[in-house]
Length: 242
Image (cartoon, rainbow, N blue to C red):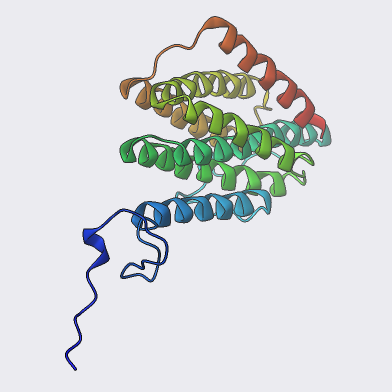
């Protein structure tokens, strides 16, 4: 008996219960849904790597100009460790923010922009993890809390629209750049290794802010900027010790 070939489901995007596509999925549950699932799985893997200390840098750790550096005193080592812990927390939050904003981006171009910035921040995360270990310091005990809070903020910014999301990046990176500049003032002059890392991070954050502004980001309202600064102060002061 002659059998008629099943119709190609790609010609009918409307979902009808029981109708399967070429991928054995209900029609309507196609590339868009698979892409969304893949994106959430990727974000979950990023969270795992961020919170388990298994970040891998794509760039080498910035090196100080001097071939050798003087040994740090115990007090200097404790200060450097505390400051680098704060910087590490900032990178934990950056991973959460960018992953959430990539998930909620309204255009593929913005999603890729956010993903690209997250890759730079992954370098920072790995560099600060390594430096913490070298200083004999530990990451913040509250990293899961910082990550969860930043992820929710990133989701809110992304869902508010691409322009708001870009504007949030502009303000966040400006504040981080200022924060890193203050750490360059506070880090011991003898700690050339930490200073080289922070200097490169500061340069990258300035570039991210400029890119977001060029893509359409604008200054957020003053009250929003004030709330962001207040939240950052709470995080940095807590992470200095915990």
